[in-house]
Length: 521
Image 1 (cartoon, helix red, strand yellow):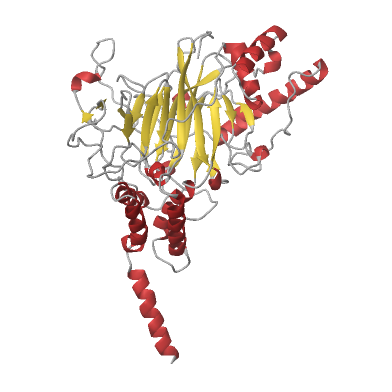
Image 2 (tube, rainbow, N blue to C red):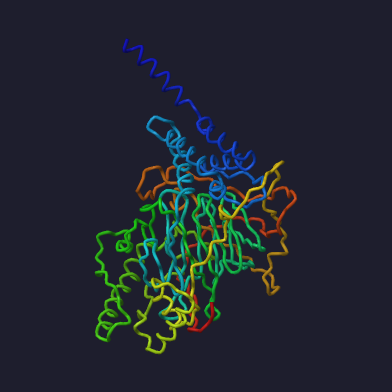
C-alpha cells in the first residue's frame, strides 16, 4: 500500500515539475488580457521576458510606459489576485521556476509599494535613503547605489574643480542590463551629445527613448529621467559651475526592498547611523556627532573639528570601500584612460565646512537657500554650495513619468506598433565645430557577466550580497527596425563600431584642474 501511494506521489510530483514556466504563468496572462487585450498582452509578455533576461516586445499602444508603469495602471484588486498567484507558485514544491517567479514577485510588489529617495548633489553632498546627510569631497568613480535583487546599479564620477571641491561630472547606470551613461564634463569620445547607450552616442530630441530591456529615458527641460522596467528611477539634473558641467543625481528605490542596497547612499534599512559602515565592518570610524555650525563659538569650534575628522574618514576609508574597479566599472573610457585615470586619493587638500565661511557669507547663503524653500535636512549642503561656489540651491526634481491617478487609458481597437525610429547617418557623427572626428572609439568595459558582477542577475537568496554570478547574460544588439508610422521625432543613434580592448594606461596625466569659478545652476 505504501508503495502505491509513493508511486501516485511521484506521478503527481512529476506532472507538476513537467510544467513549463509559461504554463504556470498562464493564469496571470489571462488576468492581464481580461483587463486590456492589447496592453495586458504586452505586459504579460514583458514580465516573462524580464524574468528570462530577454529583450521585451515592441509596444503596441500609444503610451510610453515601462512594464512597471503599465502594471500600476491595472486595478489594485487584479494586482492582488496576481500577487496571490505568484505567491502560490513560489511556495515550496509549488513550481520549479523559482528565479523567474522571484523577478515577477519583485515587479508586482513594487507596483503596490511606496518609494524612498537618496541624492548626490552640489559639490557633492549626499543624502542617504535613510536620510543621513554628509559631504563627500573626493575624486574618483564610486558605487552610488546597487541592488542585490535586480539589475540595478548607479555609479558616479567625481572630478576636481579645485584643490578642495569636486562635482559629479558623469553618471553610469545598469538599467536592467542596458548600460546608460551621461557625461556632463569630460566625454570618452569625439561624438556630439552627452548621453551614451551601451557605449554608443544617443541624442534625445525632446522625446522618450525605449531601452531594449524595458527601461525608458525621458528628457524634459534640463532633466533626464531614467526609469527601470522594475520601477526604480534616477533623475539627472544637469547644472554648471562656471565652465564646468556637473549633474545632480536623485535615486528612487522602493521601501519594500529595505536592506537590499549597498553603496554611498546606504543600505535603506531605515537606520541612518549605519549608512557609513562600508564593506569592512571591522574598520574603526569616528563617533557620530550632530554637528552644530550655528551655535556659540566654543561649541562651533569643537563640532567643526569633529566634523573634519569625520569628513577625513569618509574621504579616505569609506570612499575606498565603494570605489569601482576596472572589472566593475560601467563607464566608457577614451584610449589610454581607465577608472584609475579619474582617481586621486590625495583629494581634498583641506576639508572645509560651513563653519569656515565668514558670518556674512553664511547669512547670505542661508537667506537665499531659505527663499528657495530648501528643507532643513539639506540646508547645510545648500549653504556650503552657495558660500563657496555660488551654486544655486537645488531642490528635489519632480519625476517625469506617468502618474496612474492622472492617466486615463483609452480603448484600443487595433494594436499599432510604437517603437524607436533608429537612423544611422554617418554625417551626424561630426562634432559641432565641423571638424572631422578623430579616429577614436570609446573603450567599453568588459560586460561578461562572470567578470562584471554589476551586470549579473543575482540568485533568489534574500538579504545577501551576491558578487559571483551564475550564468552569462546576453546583451541584445541594437538593430535598425522597420519604421512603422513613427509618432515622435527621430532619435539619432550611429551604427555600432567594433569593440576594442581596454589598454593598460602608462602613467597617464591627470585631468587639468580649473580654478574655482562662480556660476549658476
